[in-house]
Length: 107
Image (cartoon, rainbow, N blue to C red):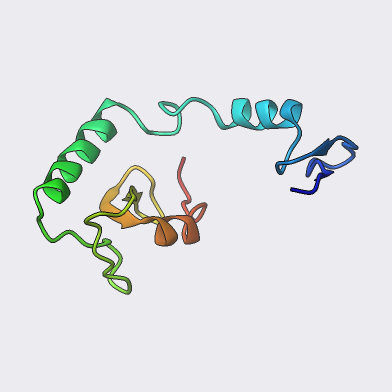
């Protein structure tokens, strides 16, 4: 893979990834812990409950009405409401989750 300049403005470091190690650590630290971002024990329990349903073969699809992707045998995320991250909507296929990431108006 070709090296490229770090994505942080003004950093001349060449890297194989988007950011150099120093800026990668700084960005991760700025994001906060997973608990600070709302991924607490309750989130883990809810995700585990959905995973059990998927594992036993229950027909579980992405919660977004315009998607309907079956999640059995696929990696998935536990999706949040687009406008209020304190509301968990349900299992969501990864493309939908990433496409709608950052739309929330609450932390």
